[in-house]
Image (cartoon, rainbow, N blue to C red):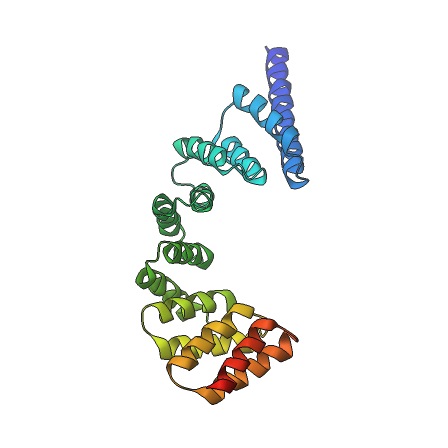
Length: 234
């Protein structure tokens, strides 16, 4: 009896050790972007013991291939096994968004946020998805809530500035774009977005100052020279 128990215990530990080794090997393959070998190993393991994590990793590998439709299929299988996993929900949403399926992506972003409401990056990704859908009021609400918690993230501030401008909050957008450029003077597009706001408010002096700042950061840039020439003629 003792011998049988010992045999079962040894067998159990061998199986566990083998599984852990396979997972470590798989993670290493994905990390090193050896996707072909990773897919082969994943398929072998799914046949033996399908799990949400294996389907999730399969989705990540297909993302690495930029085969986003197959990634969506893999994440769908993962969610059948773990429907409340925020990490899988987020990857599903992002893959759908890359495919241009922003409508379906929205619900997955929302589910992920419901599970991890403190995760600001989840909320920001939902906000970006709303911008892609041109639902600017919803995007503004997302980034406004984020700003109340973290007002120093340059990327999120830029999204809030854009959303504010699109819903007619031009003064707020102006202040935010000024803050963005103060923090990141190499943000090329924000110069032109802020320039449009100054133009609407007839602030010619600020426009010229902004153009000169832009040329200091992007010497010889034709777009800035074109804007300077236009305002010299006005």
